[in-house]
Structure formats: C-alpha cells, structure tokens
Image (cartoon, rainbow, N blue to C red):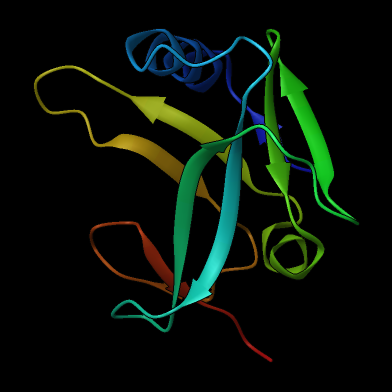
Length: 110
C-alpha cells in the first residue's frame, strides 16, 4: 500500500487545475534507474491505466503505480512540504536503504 497525505493530495489537485487537466487524470509515480543513489522517482499526470497498475486514493486524488515500481514503493508515504523553505513532494520510503540529499534518488538492498 502507498499512503498519500492530505497535503500531497491538495497539491496534486492544485497542479491538475493549473495544468487544465481532467479531474479524472491521476498522478503516476514510477521508479527508474538513475540518479545519484541508483534509482529515482518519476511523477507525471496520466489518464490511461496499464495492466497490473495499483491505484491509491486520498481526498479524491488518485496515485497510480505500475507493478515493477510498486515493489520498491510498498509502504511509502507521499507527502508535500511547501512554503519558503519547502521541498515540494517528499517520498518517505521505508524500502530505501540510501537516498541522496535532494530526496529524488534512492537505493534499496537486494
């Protein structure tokens, strides 16, 4: 399971409105090879479900993860921190054994 904080859900909704996205569009979170720690998070809006996708919802906002990425994200919480010193989206991933200081790259023990 993946948790989405109410602040992250609110920001997802605001971003969809700013980009004139359909209300039914969702945030897709993926894990890709790359980044300074070995794996990186990728997020984009999507409207098409793929075979095996897992969907999670908070405050009416869906976050969708493909099966390959899900194995790295089980138990993760997607949060958002704004303001002058805010970091943006924050991935609290219990599977990450190492992460970079920017928070968008991580590694897991295999």
